[in-house]
Image (tube, rainbow, N blue to C red; front, side, top):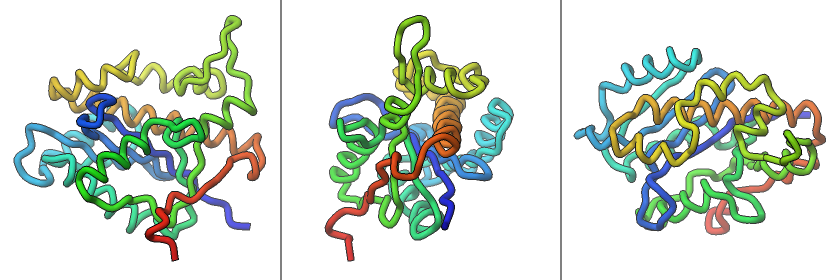
Length: 228
């Protein structure tokens, strides 16, 4: 039986409105993290300064991180599509996230679909199976601390994993990612995203160890227009 490699994904945005934009898309791969960043201070499609940002972030998170920087959201989204097509599609990969796309809606993928539709760009996650970890964590693990159940990413990670990554996150609230983008604090923004995808990946390893395959509620993200 084929064992799928888990690849965690997470996005950062400027808010929740239709007019808000995607600022970061990050992937936690088996051998490191791949992060795509929109920078307002970049004038070309992809900046040569990405290596310095990669190094700065990598030192703070003690992990290999490759960063690419883009001058617009649409160019970033196109690059993400190319990455998924060449690195993830039709490979032995299970894409996982935390509250990205659930039966109740989720955040990341509904937001991403809207931004792609407004830019008239194709949906990138075709031929890639997907599972959201939030419902699994809620149903199959106890995350109650001091009488309060908290299944947020940071709380679930603290309850079920060693918790060390929570100290690396520069933000106490995800809303701070908006302020960081507006202030051109890109290193903090990327560190936060890398922390989130690594926490998601860690929870994925926990679920793999203690949960059956049928409990993941895996599904296809391929749009009906692209099904063969």
